[in-house]
Image (cartoon, rainbow, N blue to C red; front, side, top):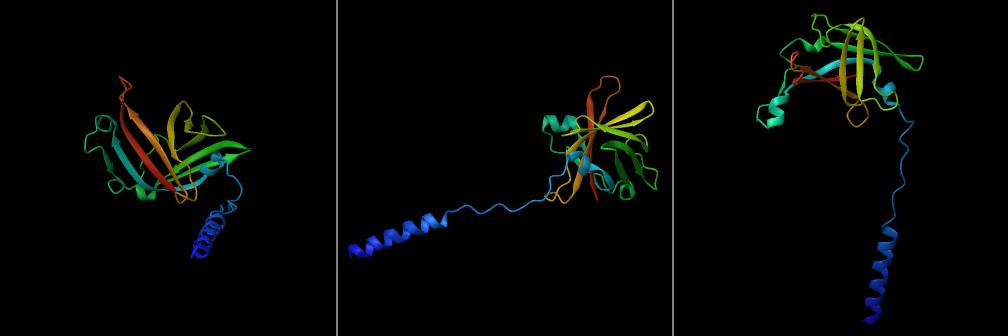
Length: 167
């Protein structure tokens, strides 16, 4: 009987030792630079409008999906990359809907290695876009960009638009 228990203990310890080995990591491919991952032709899939004051105060109605309110389905956004740096941008929309106050120009970022802000520039006009999500395999190559509208007199943030783009 004692030999049987001893055998079971040894067998259990053997299973525990051999069964707890870490799995080998799988190859994930070459690293993609964030700036290069946001370049290309994008199609607008979803638009969400948030009342910043309602969000700050915890009101129940603070965010609204407005994708179907205006003809957003035709909107495209292109970011060109040239000579290792951000180049030109263009927005396209058959219905004339203007997302960023102007349709084309040049673009830049706050940090070339890890951008969090995209600057759109057209002559003396500019727009600041916040990157909410880089495209990757987890979020199905979705690029989320936020635009905040402010009160012109007080500079207080009023409304945030989250634009969800796909390749």
